[in-house]
Image (cartoon, rainbow, N blue to C red; front, side):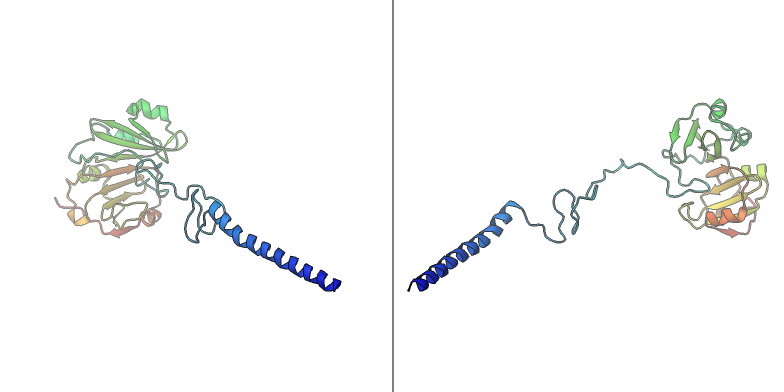
Length: 248
């Protein structure tokens, strides 16, 4: 009888221990769930955690305030379009050829003319900035933009400068003409461009070739070092057209 009583006692104690273990196992997940919220798959938790990620991703849910992002150029453009300067007022009816004489702008030696030399010729710029850096000279509503390399001028742009007649009288017939089809380098779709590669000049007009007259304002007159015509047409995505000087 004694061995049987001992075995019975051991069995009873085993049942009691098993019950305690099962009770603790049932209560523990509930206390853990109350202390630590459940993160569902596909739902970001506080701290900018992405689904399936164990660490926060910096800026994953950062809000962007309009107007605070730094402006950067879309591409490195042969003509630096679009410009990184403040909005340019549209004053195509104004004659700026006397304010910034073309001979003075043509005197800029690209790759050599320094910033002090520019300021000595055109005064202090009203704005300087962007990438690449551009200086904006303004007088009487006329605008001259100069792209700067390290410390020297690389390219100049005259905005609403003269007319088609001004360009033809000064440079003669263009080596090529074309219509912009639009890309990241030149966003002005449908504009007419005249090319003078040996002189390093490009004239842009905000109308199609059939609408050009000798009084059509020059929207942008670019002066830069001489360039390869074929490469420039490709870079700006320009469809060549036959140049027929307007009769009026």
